[in-house]
Image (cartoon, rainbow, N blue to C red):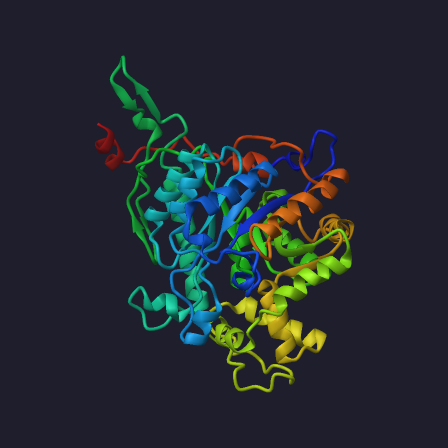
Length: 462
């Protein structure tokens, strides 16, 4: 179990965790049209390198990369409206970034639906080794027919089926990470003994969805297990997170709703025998900050002026299967179809429209600003007041920061928000450790050795 004091600095005050969510040229849907942005920047490694180094110098816990396995946009309007988030594969990028950073965590999104457990275990173990223990896996199940079509399926799997697969998948991945004890590799040149046979085991998993022999090729990762992150907020997603996640990334619009979500999730984890501190909840927040409120509001207004409503509606249709293209823009939105994909986000947007009486046009504006995440606009003190209120009320253990545009939005947070957080003792001055687990205050898992050696393992290491 994690030691709760690991979340505190030397003075004993609990501090929040912060992730830098790197996303194309910014999290606002129209970020790529802003004159201060280079829309071709994501195609260059130097762009990502500079953002990661900037986040590390500011002592962020991690950089976070989202991913999916399809180009969303069944229509030219949707494709042209949404700039590509990243044109390559996130683990490749993070492996390169590992060579230019030394402390910041490196979290990548990989789907349990379309990549086998052995591949996932091996890739993240390798990233953990290359980075000296800084890898994190954002586990997703994928939620679109477009992704399914790239893997030979006519339609995505049912929501419950995807999460059943995910539960078995992550269990196998953990077993693979534990197939080597920490001291299994001796590399004793004098004796000629490389492995200790008693400290290596196969997995020999045969379940409903996977058959995996093991062991892993890489040895045990430096962190034991790379940190497991999850972003699903549906009932199925919460059940999986309570059992397996160590960090949960969520979209919440109000402090009350965020507190209910965070504490409810920790209740579920505790009921499964876990410590409440072994699971960190980090809502996303997009921050528009300036020395005066008027300047901050102007930053948001400038981006909102670039929003193409027709393109946004087409994007919503492909992303959420919610067709608002034939609806009166000044009328309330009809209910979404609540399909097999993106259930929690469909519900979030519809509930938001109902609670605040939003028209379709107003909902599109809200969605464009941060895809349903919290948006804070104001002075440094006003922004930090709200972050502190969420943190101290139990609504968040920290936040994943969604800069509206890069690099300027991240620069604003570093220059204006972090000093105020530090002045209040709410964010670190220096990293506490060398690994992502150490900086997040999460315990390193035990590999549960010794264990009986199977005949196959004896034969393998003979």
